Image 1: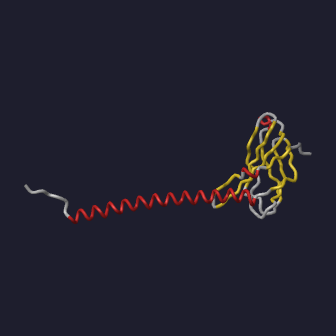
Image 2: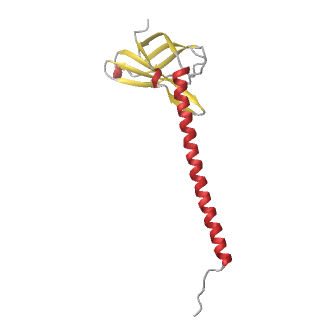
Image 3: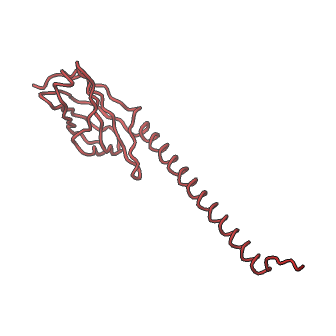
Length: 154
């Protein structure tokens, strides 16, 4: 009885194919791990930028009908891409995006937001939350919230 086995050529081809498959899997895993590390570093850098480079001063703030107007000034040489405005009313709290665009370095601008006065009620306070963007990653600067006492516009 003769035993048949795999020829040395076929065995070599199978070993090479197996090695290439393992190498490809390791490279894919390594690439995804590296991408996660880079995203984590960019996110950490955005949080640091929020703390170090974002400073806003409120010049005035008022509301009328269904619109809130807040005049703010960027106190640093850093672009703020947008704001969230949390409106605290007698009836409820509403979070609205600002209607204005970015606030450039050392720029002053009126930031507006629209709300539903029937649902929210009379506005008692607003909280501005700056948002910055670094390499297409938008970061909400929670550490830089700005509470504002509101009054009716004249």
